[in-house]
Length: 366
Image (cartoon, rainbow, N blue to C red; front, side):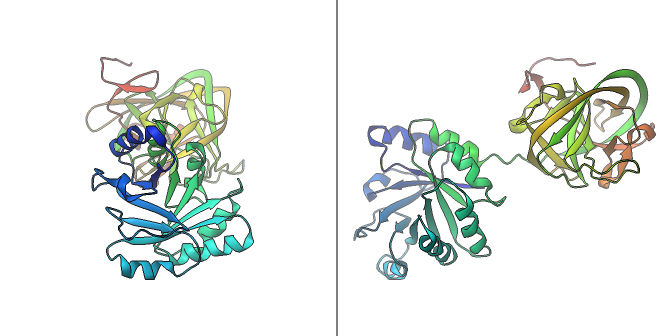
């Protein structure tokens, strides 16, 4: 879980409303310039006093963490004066020497707050690599939520957290949503194939993403919103064509697939920049960005299956041997060889759907 530090030093008259929103959204820390700003904050919120390169007050109030700037070595002396308070260092990276200083701080400090003068994320990559394996936390200053989202993904794992100064009420909510963007794992079930039927010609969609799938990963696809099958990516060798580990030959264009925040999308809706869930055979999910969707006319195959609770699941996909789905344990099954009694991996969303959003209402799909 990424840390969200909300810097209210310049919030002015909106401070009270912003802090109230931050507490409601369970933001990890409030950053202030004076200990009086922490009065009334619950213990669930870390209280960070930003002293910068100025003097540290003799009385720190309810501060949990104090961030200081300047040369190395201030932390241990301050920790002796203020037992029970953690100290960290702030470094603004503007050139090679300050980048070296940031690398040292990231390796040595319990808390390291970094601001980068230039928009490139290469210096942050260097700091993250230099600090690999250390026990401290790197908090990177972000100008807005969009930059925070990028920071969270630098070198795949990103900073431990982001510090952002909100411009208005609502920014705390948006920052927390960006930090919590990793999808929850899904409870997959075993489906038993009951019927396989050739259904003629139609349009199917190949979903080409901007990521490499693993051999036990794919995307969930189904004709109905309450039942989907795990369609494997083209990571497994084929005799007549090279592997395309970024692609899932997913199914007919009207099929559902899982997106972010519990939403579904029709395959026909996906386009460059859309998000889909990459899911492995254990149900572990991650977000994949769509690069393009290829929709072409092909012969189609209808696969009916039943879940242990009796839920009926259908998948219509291309009627060709090289199109595959996943079974228990990551077994790869060619679609044209499926037969009644075969076992597939699937997912059963509990809600019906309205324009992709889950909703509790009567809906029959057949």
